[in-house]
Image 1 (cartoon, rainbow, N blue to C red):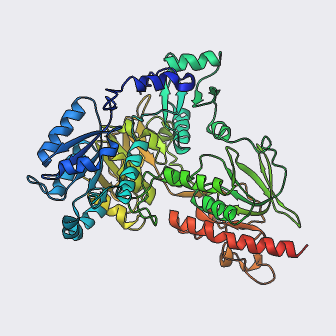
Image 2: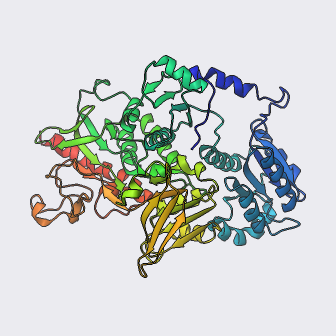
Image 3: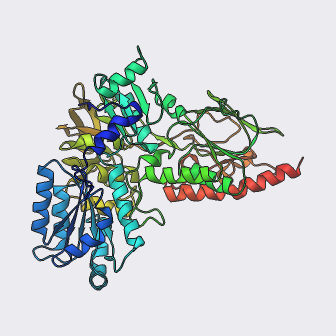
Length: 584
């Protein structure tokens, strides 16, 4: 793998100057390497260009009157080393069915977002035909062309798509973090992923680059890798947890000595929802997260079935928005500190122990989520971080360009990863032990996968071996019915293998099922009921301790369900706090 040689990062001044030097002219203020937006319509391309004028400072607006002309424009852009961020098209073209055109444009630039934006009269006529195609993933959004100035609903949709494109771009325009490393290994890849999920664009550079030399000059004799975040001094980093802990002060450094009303363990969708609703209703709320805010859902490239986001939203962006929302209401976050034990309060606060300090709280919500099961094949485990990844590993997607990629897993996370990786890889193959995806994946993802020309599904198949040095080169798979084995070329293997709960730190007072998921409500065995009554719906066997999201036995394992549980637990917390106060 190549490590990019980057400009110096000292306060990122030289990076800013290099960007400024790319200005073509003061009059046009267009960057030489600005990504393009291609606007396609036989008679309305210039009208579309007028509507997109506000983007002309940062994007290269190109027009075309036909599918063929749009392909020629795209070829010119790509051949010159440029990129296309978005295609925007009328729903009728003179030389091709618009759906065929979108497929051709997707082949030409798989990462570009695709928008259909006809005038109102054509929108109404073609909506019944086009909306089903959008659900298959043929294009990303179906909008009415603006009918006047300041059509902000239209532009909100466009900027959301551009933001999603930019956040997944292999070439972000502004770099907010550098990792100085002499090789890309599993640690570097995990650091990249953490930084990305915390909302900062990141690049890896070599120690003999200008940035690397400047970082090593600031930390002479340091051991690689180094992490240099915008506005901070370079740091010598030896673990992901260490970097995560640097984003917020530690529990002891923050002088956290009081008793919180609510401590939430885990900052996935369920925990973040609990934090937002708890703090917004006046509870002194703290959140403890061992890694990146957003949880496992934060690795999802696109969640399309979450209420209110008709174009979908990435797990990373959803997590970032929820974090900012919780902080607005006063939630305090502590990242990089894993809960090591919970001591139930007996007439006093519950105590959560971490390596970074102790948190005491009157109520606790367990939202620690799950982790992916390990495959357990030694050759595969030996290549983790070097072509083999647990989870979606979005930061590795661009390195899959032109290669054959395999995904093991049949849940929604696997489907979302497949759709994202298909933008880069030559082919994506989903391997599942079941006959197909119907039992485990949402129908909208099954539809999108079925209509993606580069994604295939192989049922009744497992991975039994891997090879390559220093990176993954081959996989050996086995058909579970016939025993037939094949060795295939592979550039990437992404393992999304089901759920193991993060609950090993819980005390025996908290009842769990045979698989370690936390029992709540009527799922609690009768002999653990208090006073002959079951706990409340999301309450555990310890009064004042609740469980929500994927770690809870019987949960739906969907983002919307996790958010629902996280918000629904807050009234139960209020009831508990009121009862506790009344008992003293």
